[in-house]
Length: 193
Image (cartoon, rainbow, N blue to C red; front, side):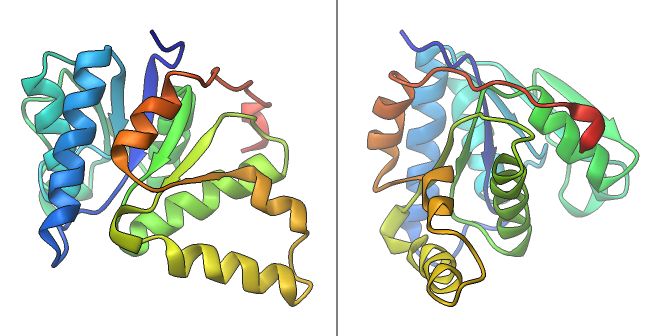
């Protein structure tokens, strides 16, 4: 039994061109639902976001969606989520995702996923939180992202310790196993966010 009870999942509002991405989302959602880990996510019913949420619900799990008002049409808010919070801004959305989660899992996605990933990693670097961050390298998706961070380190723009801010996991199955051994991280001072 994991002590991680609530997991923020950052992932795409599209499914991508490789079917393995959606399959990984289904596996993740099923595993979370069976383990009793609540999904905290961006609130959409499309893309990998929707795939993960549907799988959690099908497995009997809980889903908290957090979506800003202006995106309720673009990302099509998931009407079956256990709870849906509609925020006024993107920043309020991110703050709520952070507050509701014991840990973070970054799955394949596009610019929005990169934004969320870098922000939560940066917040950890700034010691605003110490919650675990897992980067799931489904079908090599995360390799360019990690390479960019490594390049910034080599060029002197980031300290080598930055690689310790997150953990790269090679599969959803490995991520679900890793979640069993993680402890929820500490919160920083939310007024600094």
